[in-house]
Structure formats: structure tokens, C-alpha cells
Length: 440
Image 1: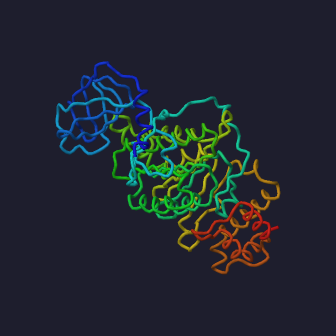
Image 2: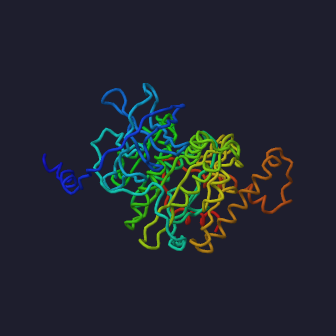
Image 3: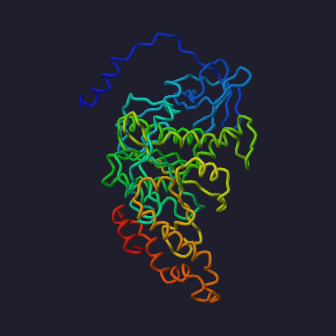
């Protein structure tokens, strides 16, 4: 029994004793979740503990300064918070816990377990904003990434270290698709950030994946929609920091972020609280910059040989593909998968709109024959969809367009190729072989 505490006691024995006086501040104002604290000078990103009803306390994070006072945002509710409450800093500012102890566990935005297991003991930390390196340290994408989804493997082949977006409206199948990729992909470590999603969806995901074969190499960081915006943002940074930590060890990491839009919503709430103007449809500049900073942290590392393949879901509000978050994500990502509500209503799952989807590195990682067949498949699908109404009305005369004639004849086969059961996994080699059998 005592061996369980050996690592903890060893770390405590090697810890330097801090005899410096402890400073604290006082809560002087509260406006929603925004606090003003006097008498405390700590950097942005620092975590503080606020005395709350005797021995209880609540956490807050420093987000800015104003008129000599420190601006903080609570990580919980403001119920029973009183003026003059004592505020004490804790931990190292700007650092987040990482380490092998998180493998096989589900944690919240503060790194605390939510799966009912024991506390996680890890003294390793990583900067919340990441470790900025030279642009030339990011090696190019040269290896294929197997998603386990036939349509993606064959027609929009992705690479290890690529940043991919899954873009669709609500209820079209984004979560099901990333569930398929998480199950069918091959990676040393899988980091899943469920940010701003439904609590029911979080529990379902943890139940499915934390009892599977990949449990020991999976970390789930879950911050549901009813949590504070800075905690949601902190959860996204924690998931990305863990991915960077394992990449620094030379491992191949799959980082799944569901969803990038909820992260932007959290950053928007914080920006508006600090007085930033809402520029693009209510999004202040800092909210859209947060997306860029998170996405740019994924990729390959030339120094360690490790990689972070990023998979980010993007919610298109009202199925609007010109939404600021969608547009910003599309411009910074290395590829995107567009899910169509029309295809989903026809019963095609996954409802991937091949004509609108794109992998910017596919031509660099697959043979020329694969590229030609994927281009041919895309042309046939686009030709049929462009003339679908004419065909269904019987207004099209056979022989007028050779490509359209072929697309009509092969429509059922093309649709069957795109469809796949959520429980089915088709590897990259089989996907390419089936594409050759279909069109070769």
C-alpha cells in the first residue's frame, strides 16, 4: 500500500521550500462571471483560489487588467460569492499538467479526473500557449494517414501531421464521423477534446472509447457547454498541450477537437467581457485569432520526428459555409471535409460532399493513378449533382453529354462507394483497391 505513495513522497522530498510571504487580494466587484480584484499582481493566465463559504473555495483565471485592478473570470458559478473574499494565487502561471498519467483517463479543463478514478499524479507541465518554434521546424507531410473511412481514404487522402476540418451544420453527423476516425485510425496516442458539447455526448463517447482496445493510449478532455467560457478555452489548450507533449517524445498523435466553433464562442464571450468590439458577425478579432493559434500548434516536428494530426469539427451556423469561423478555419487548415444536409436526408452516411471536400496534400502522398481516379470520381459525382433535377424530371436526353451519361449509369455504384456503416472500418489499401475496381 505504501508503494502507491512512493512517487508522491519522492516529489515532495525534492521540492524546494518556499519561504516567501504569500500575497492575496480581495474581490471588489463582480459582473456576471467577471471579477475585479484589488491588491494582487499576477500575470494573465494565472490560476487563483477564492475563499468561499468557510473551507470551500472556487477557482478563477486572470484574463486582463484595468485601472490598477486584476480582471478574473470564474471557472464556476458566482452563487454565494461575497465582496471582500480573499483571492490567493496558486500553481505556475501559464502552465498546464501533462504526462503519461493521463493516458486512459477522462479529465476536465483543469486536468482533474471526471471518470471516477483516482487522482492523477503528474509533475510534468507544458506551456498553455505552446512552445513556438521556427516555421522550418515543421517538416512537410509525406506519409498517408489512414482514417478507416473509405470515402476519405480514397477521395480526400490525408497525411500524418495534416490539419483537417469537418464542416457541417448541426445534426448532420460530425460527431459520428470523428467517432469512426478515432476508432479506425492508427496513432500512438489519441487526444480527444470535447469542448462545449452536450454532457450526454461526452458520457457516450467516454463509455465507448474508454472500454475499447485503444483505452490505454487515449486521453479525453471534456468541458461541456454549461461550463464557464474560460474553462472551455482552457480545456482546448490542455488537449493541445498534451498533444504537443507526446509529439516532443517522438510519438504520432491524433488530436480530435470537437468543436472548434465552441472554442471560438468561448473566446468571443471573454473578448466581449473585456470590451472588444464585435467585428465579424459579433466575433471580436481575438476570438478568430484563438482559432489560428490552436490550429497552428498541430503538425510534424522535424526535431523529434513526432507529429500531431489535427482533426477539428466546425459548426456552420444555419448551414452557412461563409460563417466567420468556417471561413477562418478553411483558410488556415490543410484540408476540409464538408458534410451535406441534403445527402444526409437521402440516407447517405457519412454525408460527405466530395465535390466540396478537399485535401491540400493528397497530390504529394498518393500515386498518380490514385490521383487520376479520385479526380474522375469527383467529376462524375459533380456532373450528376449539377444535373440531378433535369434527370429526375426526365428532361435530359441521353447522349447529349457522355460524362453525364456515365454518371447516371454509375450513380448507384458511386453512392454505395461513399456509404459506410458507423461500425465498419476500411483501411487505406482496401479503399484504394476498391476505387481501382470501380473506375480502373
